[in-house]
Image (cartoon, rainbow, N blue to C red; front, top):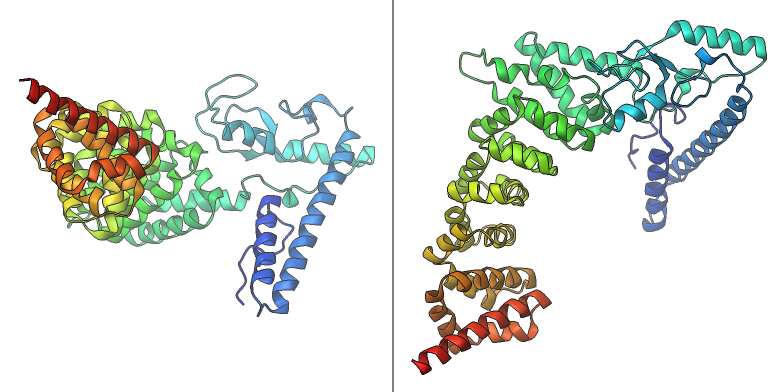
Length: 456
């Protein structure tokens, strides 16, 4: 059985307790579920459990020892924790803090010095070797042990060597084409496998522009190198997954235009990942507005119309998220989304995802008018009649309810459907709670329309 990789090296160095717990859970599940498990799996589980125990002992020991240093010199204490610094680092403001505490401050989205309130030009942390040596000398004179920073468990799992390597990769993004390609491939791999590397992009304000340098320069005679574009766009997707990066990524001026360009001209995987990046970034409402204003809905809709199977799901997810806010619904309708979605639904392509977008758009009057004009009613009635998916039936009847509220002429087709198949009354009896409400609402309007006709 292949090793999972978490404990391929020393398990007590640079590993978070949460990672060890996940690894232990995975190994125990293998032992319990797999009758053919091997003894190596049990050994790995024992190693993981021992490593977890050692971390707990070290943490408790460290806490006891640090309490003995409450009377240490003030300049040895972290301004945030008011405790003896274990790993002193210098912030861009020139102030020194204990690394875990200032990292937590920065991770919370703060971009000012907690001591001087100065706005930080960058968030790179530089080891303060002088203070570290002074603390070490003081501890020896007091008979107090301070753990070696090399064995400190970094909350993000990143070492100084990792940071140096990260910065060197970014520098190569402005070098030769070969170096750009190699650096982009490695950044793509690192940000996929290690969430901590995604966080590094939030520590340096120039990191994202440096990553995008090859795409913004476009010095290649035949345009952007497709593999390089794919690696950079995929790296951008990976770092956008990190919640603290979403705002920073979207507000970097060249990001959304380059994602739009990738939607139009990249490889199929590049296009799919560009759409996925827009979907991920649109988790923030402020980003939804920014992306919509940038005109990104049009290339998304154009790509949806092309209909490549590998891209449709990511595109639909992005359009759905963006259309949660009303102004983007108007933009999407203006860009022709209703016609494109209806054509896909009629072709039986990703009906579930596209119906969800259509029902969201049914709160926009122009979208509803277009649905009525494009043959939506018979299409949706057919889905209700033939589909086994309760959610799809619910979405269809909700859209039909919106249509009949704004266009009474469509009641005729619904009445004919009801007289022939009893489709709407059946749904009013056995559908979901929302589907029953919408179906009964349509039936009430049909009855009122009949009564008005008889009275006339």
